[in-house]
Image (tube, rainbow over all chains, first blue to last red; front, side, top):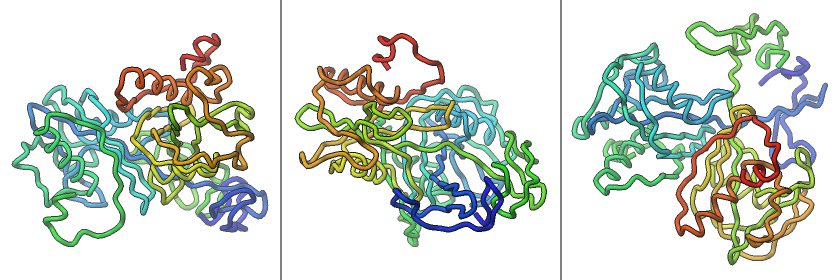
Length: 189
Length: 189
């Protein structure tokens, strides 16, 4: 942020406003305080006869790696509407949302992931503009070392473990920016 | 948004960018696309020996009405860190977060409420700068007709019902902008 989006002034200060506790961009010309808040990434884990639908990314970051359909929640959307939209945009797939499943905070990039379990309604799917490929994977075929994000690895690991245990509680967790250097740990999410 | 926060130009267009599906503010001068996304409101339901901690609001909106401690999640925060911070800021209260409890989408104002159940750790609480009063309420004394937000009413209703049922599942729901005109419905959330 270099200019005030309210008055156009370049006289922005990064300071704690009166009565506040955190630094914000404050316009010295018109006094507007510019709050910046985390974004929500919403998506789902679509299942068909025990297999899971994954999308191969056609865009950066992580071009060429596999992910569950997910993306930024938009203004005016509910969480489930966002998950349905992203699934349709990235995989041309129609799903029925089952339940909230994983909620993962990523404070180092100010994102909150919210993932639902979902049932794929038919096999008429295929890559949208942001995907190179869309496929169903059985548990044994999941490309663990080619998954795009740790949030996706964690959500899939939870799912296959919970399926064995026979219950799908909501999983709340956080991931920090610590890089994972050991591929076996990467696979573990 | 009247000026581009990247280059200061006032030549902003509100249109669908190429390859996108939704209207955004796009700067005609420097081509920056200004995405706007929902905000997360995070808070908790602090319990002490069966009573619930509520805060009487000292600020608009809903000045003078009662609420659970909650507020906007900040950049760099996890969901639970935000809930702890808001509880301390609004009620000077220390809690231990139990579990994720209600997740409520408010698409008409582009907010997502995320509320946790929590245990109040001691009775050394009191109003912060944004509260006029902070009190513990037994179920029979909850000021149902003086609650600040429908999200709070819904979270409290869920809590007292679930407590009778003996289980606290995560509740996922949405609220639209439909005004509630009948006070008995207001109390029902």
